[in-house]
Length: 350
Image (cartoon, rainbow, N blue to C red; front, side, top):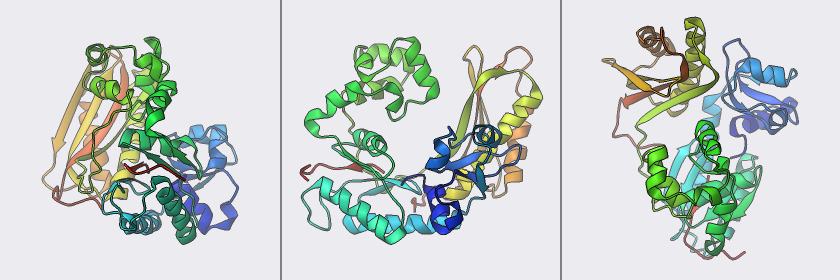
């Protein structure tokens, strides 16, 4: 979906339409959960501190999240998906992989299915969706982001490898800001640059992810669409523009990360018992600390107090902190099943 939370707000409240809008809280420690495309034109992005967003766009409108409204729309969208195939793997409330190799409509064109789904979503929800069509999950995900908003992009099998080679490394699914910066320092700016490195060298540089980069840059992804995928954890992390050394600043930054994680916990109703704090020092040493509570954490105050207590026991006297992350795991019901791009192996004709 396109700017999902913000688009729902603009749909439901006409006074917000065609205006820069952020879903979140404008308070000093607030974080942007979603931004409308009007807000994005000013440089406002999700996960951005609200203070930064307001500096970029002083007339930005903030609205509080309405998770129940978003879940209701999400259920409508997932219902549409399931009319075409049972192989639907949700990634979040507004995104999913579909495999329609065999589909309920007996349609033999992947592109036509995507077009029809987009039309159905617009008619039933009043919202726009972007779709990506290709032969595997990696390519479909890239394609779905390629022509937002309201886009449809098809990566044909015969052009897939050339397409990936021409892609900027930042557009690779799974390559975040920090990894992209590291790749740039190594002279890797496009898929073509990445393809010059051997699999062994990529693993040396990036660990297990190196295997994935080696295959993805060759347009290979063997993962199947899994409708029964169970989420094991929910988390977020932040790499700071300048390394942290003051304990007060660390606490403030951790609070903002905790708020982001808690919004995702509430969104997915993922109430776990184990809180994990991740710290990366300025010399790239990484440590983690975990604490497991006897009962699932259902209140933000408990989650925040636990994270804050773990931070107090981290030694910051000698080394500055480059990155902090928080996650929650040990879900109260790990057997519970979860409530895009589109993975397809059909003809690509229009």
